[in-house]
Image (cartoon, rainbow, N blue to C red; front, side, top):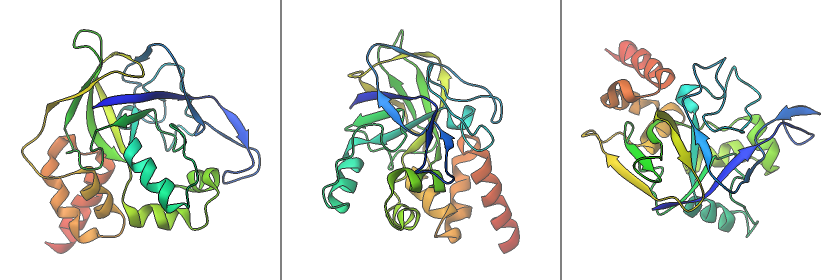
Length: 225
């Protein structure tokens, strides 16, 4: 298990997002050399967990619960096949880390990854999912993208930064802790999108669960109690 690339975005205007001339940081590109990773701070004030990476819409993106976004190369390959062979480079989904050999969507909420060397690499914790938005859909310019992405449930994972460090392409990824519940990234994604009956089940992830998903699950539980 390793990182194929570390991807950073710069602010740019794009006519392919939700509004003409909209400024976005979704266009992330692989970079060379080490990149510092640290907890960015709360949503609204903290941006990306990676130095040099841009998050424009701080009200809805970034912060400690979305510090680092990981997506598997294997899932990009799946999309390439479904999109009739359209090439999808590393970083095109706006992910910071493109992985190889890591079951990102099968990762457990609260699972911890050591990326890179034990003494210099960050410790990251799986905590949340990526919900497709109009900016994402506009960026890819694929018809019905939000519906397709949601149905496929290959969301990728957001990670918290538990310990800071540095990452670079080629770094190993080691799973150093797996919780004893069965709540995966895919389970949470399906619960908060198309299968709300699963919401009570994701509460088993405890405090490791993203607060927004937890709140939604608690509301569902109170209504059905």
